[in-house]
Image (cartoon, rainbow, N blue to C red; front, top):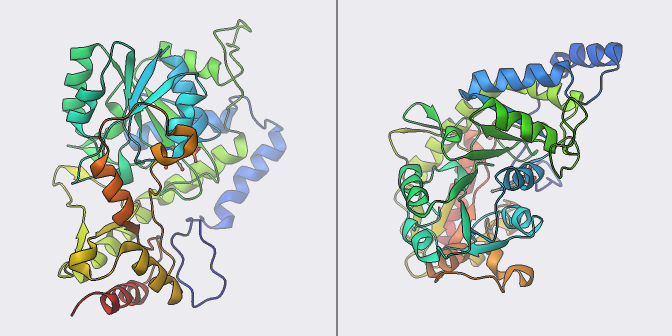
Length: 374
Ligand SMILES: Cc1ncc(COP(=O)(O)O)c(C=O)c1O
């Protein structure tokens, strides 16, 4: 998160905080009960409320999305290689590494920056046990073709849905696709619990197993269900999540209005491309990425970022660098990554948060226009 140094600076993102008085009764309840963690009553309430809000069957709450990804891989008992995208948070690949498995990086689609279906096909080897696609910036992957590929090669599918709170495909939560999906409730996300995460699964047996794994492997009968870790979400954060949930629709609506305004103002700028929205998707407007084509725009992405920073407008080169370009991940197998490399060099996420004003959006666009050819 960028931090504003003075009131004239325009930050990249600002976490939504509900009114403090909404939180107070939960704090009193927790103080009275002394139930602080370990699957407490507020945690149970939050799980149910999330299932209802998102339209999913089972949710396991986590301290953060990275631990949820690590446990999801463990729960699926994956082996060998996992095909994933290099255009993601390093957390995606770290979760594979922490399971002692190998990430294999596939190229991405130009249109939505998600892992390319043909790249997945090219990356499959006898060692592959799963596909770990990321719904990048909340734009859903082609879940139907990924499912077909997984069936054809007998692979599991684990979605990194960290950006996907509330995203729906044809009226159904995008988290209902694949074997498991993982959400992040990090402070920078559309829906935050300061920190937090979740695994969405489809049956009670898997939920119980995952719940044991995140509780150092111990099940409610104090038997060891497997090799686990402590990754639980506590009562305070669960309470905060319950309060946040009341405002989720309003927050997303504000972000949609801001996104619509950006789209209208930016649409005629040569050399600047936005991701097309698909009619059958309900978006959460989590980021506003644009692609800068240096030749057509007349300046490179880096020049634009530097210029905006000079105007005190803070953007982010997200995701840059590619995960496969970090030395620690550079020796794993990849397909040709030419699209991912180009997008990582051209992308910029513009400031977007629930209460960004119309004037602030206009100021960002005017600054971009100043750099663009007229
Ligand atoms: C795509 C992606 N995956 C995983 C994570 C990890 O989530 P968390 O920060 O909650 O551990 C993030 C968050 O930053 C992310 O953007």
